[in-house]
Amino acid sequence: MKRAIRSAEVLCQRLELPAEFNRRVAEAAPGNPFPVFVPLEFLSRMRPGDCRDPLLRQVLPLPEEGDTAAGFSTDPVGELQGSPAASLSVGLLRKYHGRALLVASGACGVHCRYCFRRHFPYDTVPHGDAAWDQPLAMLSDDPTLDEVILSGGDPLVLTDPALENLIRRVAEVPHVRRLRIHSRLPIVIPQRITERLLDLLRGTRLSTWMVVHANHPTELDAATLAALGRLVDRGIPVLNQAVLLRGVNDQLAALEQLCRTLVDHRVQPYYLHQLDRVAGAAHYEVPVARGRQLVAELRTRLPGYAVPTYVVEQAGEPSKTPL
Ligand code: SF4
Image (cartoon, rainbow, N blue to C red; front, side, top):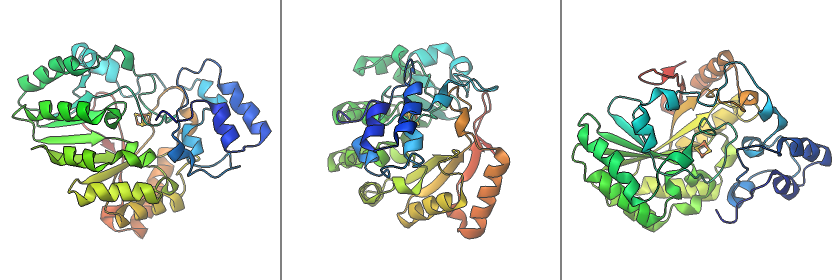
């Protein structure tokens, strides 16, 4: 992560993009509150000279981020107004029955421009071991919670000792049975999946699931597929969620190849999310009718287990809504 690219200008230079395109990108830079962050491992999968590269498009800020669009807001899924303020202030979100989400980290291994939490006030969430006291006490007090989701930001940004300590403390809550880790790091920096991390994940009594996030087949290079294989080989089920994004994966060929590559490597395509309508991301939105058409076509070409469920998250709803 220390070596990651942190400026749109450098990103364009490294990919040798046309000067005219670079000038357009420069217009988006001043005052953009969501900084660029692209690890070199992810950069290496982009095609030099191609300003339409589907991986580049996920991480490069364009002037369209400054556009205002009706229905797009800084809290698209109601996490700020919708959750009890006391929970949010300690980094615990309870959106769905039986599950609690711990905001394990405010940092990510990549900054995705369409992220629904791009305006999330991570700086107000306490950090460090003592910061877990209150959310874990809240977990202990609610016996209906049997699953803990580590999210963020990205929980695998934590150091191994910090992660081990957090998982140990979650496992001490007797009614928690499952641990779900939502992370994009296995995709963007696959070297994070070390033997030590695998030992740590297998060393808990909790049933541990990993949910990764890849949107396009070219994200799945050999190193990434090997990392996913290491997780599966150690008995950790891996699911993938993707977001349907204009100019990235809104073509049948891309989605089909993504799903095929995932199942070829024992990873189940789990969700295809309709874009959360977060301010700054309207240019990524694909109409629902087009999404339905794509998923219907996928069903005619792939076995059922290889077709993700197309869903949208709606503020206040008790579950994701199938489309
Ligand atoms: S890795 Fe996940 S949480 Fe982080 S910016 Fe990307 S989509 Fe958002």
